[in-house]
Length: 292
Image 1: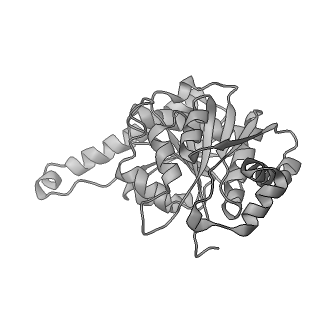
Image 2: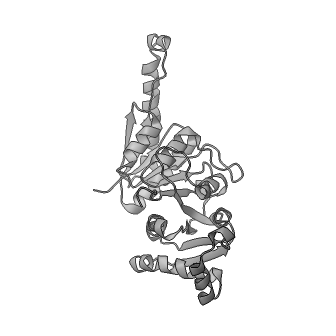
């Protein structure tokens, strides 16, 4: 059974944009789409007496039905269902994400300058979900270049597989090139490694070492996805700055994120990309130290 693509809907136009992106993703992968809305009645004795809880529930049901109708109108070939659950939205998304292909969320702050506005729901989902989470910037998703490439920030070896798996599948499903990007800097004095210096001498410089390592990481994935054109991008400088620049012409940016249940920190590269990259961002959980 195909794992579903999940989209969180909350009645805003930005969550509807995210639902549309999720529907396109479900179509490309032949997966079902599930729209989720977590509803928690507001507390208060007087609200109960006035029947406000029933009114809230009907309103929640209506916003979910409206989102379902919109998706069915625009993506009539996608199998879509909706679920209204009395549960905090972040908890609901994290729980359902255990069996999902992807979770898709919308940002409430559009624009390349202001970046993504995550809010508490987005942060909790990003830090706890075990599946990839795609953040869609409201208002800009429909203006992405349709033929734009997929850009993947390729992390160190033990963390690269999850990112490359998602990125190659995304590029193959869309029929577009994948740009596998890695930034490098000269090692600091306190991290001096004689073996690394020896390799730099053998390969003709620091950048060539990183090119060689990136090519080695990509080799099995190129063999698995021969139909995907791959551009190897190695650049000196900060990783976040490089990815933000490359995202401007991409239809999707794929980066790794930390997934620590007791922390909302997702990693400095993921954090910077969320704030400044003008593209949908797929944040792929990386193995924790305990996993490794």
